[in-house]
Length: 303
Length: 52
Image 1 (spheres, rainbow over the protein chains, first blue to last red):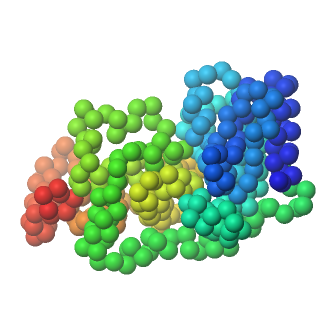
Image 2: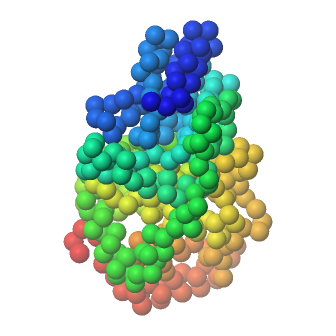
Image 3: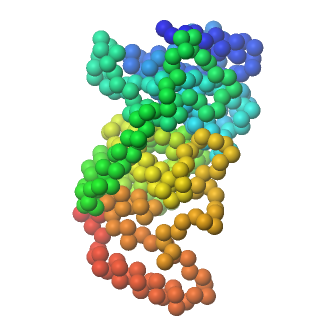
């Protein structure tokens, strides 16, 4: 379909044949036309499976963790958000830079798979951009070893012109009164199935043992109840505080359509106000606001 | 954290953090008294509960 796709296949085949890498992680065509799930390719002859289309939504960074304890070198295709995810994992010392070869793609934004399913294939051109792409600040990868260029020169999107709307949802909820806010979140999280898909897909969630799997510890029970669900919601959000790269994967995979990103963005907005503007996963050298101590840090509790 | 609780619709006063040294007994007592009064004024928490 696109020349970018051809380049992806060619590069993957070269890297695998020369044994420079043992695994290539990209996207392949899924069961439906609006799904392009991750593909894990080890055989050079399988590179024809790789695709690049408007549904290559998955953030591939997370899958590096599956190879964390191995020896193999991995080639990974990175859009803007994938690259930031990789940066986050590197910064958390979850993966060695030498073991990953990053092939950058200037992302033109991916489409909303659920809306696509509702519209049908005949109206493929009308499918809107995914929510995360509307407010994307870095469509191009912030870290890569090589960058694939589209022949047509198109593709590279300007850093979202609509980035102003990034916190619109947060501001809307902030404007409510406390009881309305509580009612809003209760109605959302009462639907939570506690499937932990949001945690499993998140490139910031990389604890070896997650607090939510330790049901005997007494912090958070497995029970699906109002109190436990909201405790889960708050704890999950705080655990990725300052590390969320706004890839929106948690919200995308949520089977109940809970606006998880509204919570994440609230924390990002607060951190920006308290510690100065910061975007996670942009720069390996800049330490995250909650990962360092500065005498000038604000202290809202100290009176 | 307080801001997040507020965002979820809770009274932020219910969660407070203070630094008190082991040698600051009177200050500790004063802070606890103050927080207790603030929370008593709010009344029992009815949110985030299963029986509410």
